[in-house]
Length: 491
Image 1 (cartoon, rainbow, N blue to C red):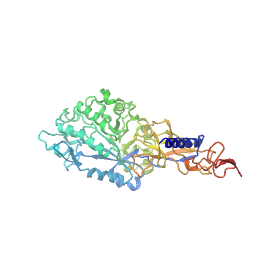
Image 2: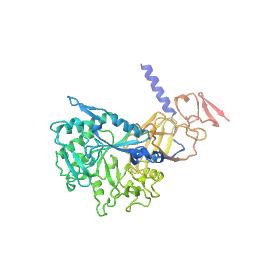
Image 3: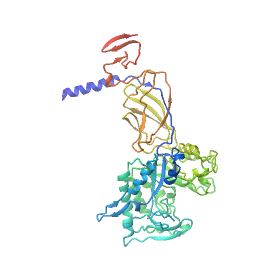
Image 4: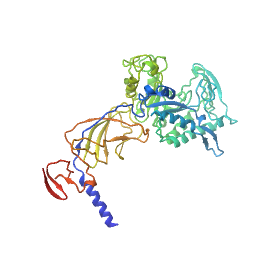
C-alpha cells in the first residue's frame, strides 16, 4: 500500500510538472441559431402547421395541460394514479420538431371545450368531482364566457394539487423535453379573476384562500426543479399573498405577462398596470427566475405588429426584451401577419434577442487544462446548469445564473489540441443535461493569436520531445530540445 501511494504521488507530480505557462489559443465560433430555452414561442398546432417555414425560427412551443387528462384515480392510501400517455404524446410531438415545451396546468378555462366538449368544464380529475363533498359553481363571466369553478373548500382537491406537482416533478423534473412551466390559480391559471366582471370571488370556495396559496407555493419550492413562473397579476394584494409576504418574495420563481407590450403597458402611459405589477413582484426577480409571457391581444394587430423594427406604441421588441429580461414570449399570431416584418427571418431575429448569449473573450491552455473567460451579452441568464467541456471532460463551473454583462473564468481539466498551424481540432463545447440531444448551446468567439504549436502535455507524451522550459515540442521545431532525457539539436 505504501509503495502504491508513492507511485500515485509521483504520477501526480509528473502530470503537474507537464503543465507550462498559459498560452493564448486562436478560436473562432459563432451563434447561428435560436438558443435552447429562449425566444419566441408558438402553440403546438401552429408550430406543426408552420414547421417548414418557421421550424428554425423558434425553439419553444406552448401548451395548456389539463390534469384530468393524466389522472385516472386515487388508491385508498392516497396514492394518485396516472396514465401519462397524453402528456408523453404531447412532449414527443414537440420534440419531433427539435423544440422544447412551455407547459401550463390549469383547472379553470372560461369557454374552453378541451375537457369534455362542454364550455368551461374544469380540469379537476374525475375522482375528485365524484366525491360527495365536492361542489363546483358556475358563472357566465362578462368578457370570458361560461365558466365552472373548482371547489376550494374540498380537502382532497387541496391535497391533490400539491401531490400532483410532486408526482409531476418526480417524473419530469430533469426531462429535457420541458423548458419551463407556468403555474397559478384563477382563470387560465394566471390570476385573471376579478369581481368587476361578475365572478363573485369567494375565498375557500371558487378561489383558494391566501393561506392555501402560500402553502402551495412553499411546497412547489421544495419539489419543483423545473424553472417555474407565475403571472404578474399575482401582484394584487386583494386576491394573493405575494406582495405582503417576505417568505414568498424570497422564492426563486419567475414571472409571465400575458399582455406584454400592449398600448398602455408602461408607467407613463394612460395605465401602466403591467409595469407596476412587474415592479411589485420584484425588479430583480429575473436574476433567479425565468421571465416571459405572451404578446398582447388587447388589439388584434398587437401580435402581428410587435416585430416591426420601428417599434409598436413607441417601443421595439428588442428594447422591451432587454428591459424585462425576457427569455421566452408567446407570439402565436405573428406569422399570420401580412406586414413586411411578418416572416421567418424577422421571427428568428426576435427570438435571438431574448435570453442568454455567451461570448468567449479569452481562451488559454497550459497543455494540461484549458481556461476560458465567458461573458453573457444577452438580456437574461440561463436558468439551468450548463458546462463548457472538451470531449467528455466538463468544467466544474456552471453557466447557470451568469447575469447579462458579467463574465466568469471557466477551467476545463483537459487540454486543447492545436496543430502546427495553430488550428484547434477539439474546440470546447457547451453541454447541458436539460436540452434535447439534437440541440446545442452555441457561443461566440473571435480570438486571434500569433502563438501556435501548443500541444497536449498529457501522460501519453511523457517519453516525447520537450523544449528546455518543459513544454512538449511542437512538430517541426528547430533548436535544442530534450528527447529521452538527453539534449538534442534539431535542424
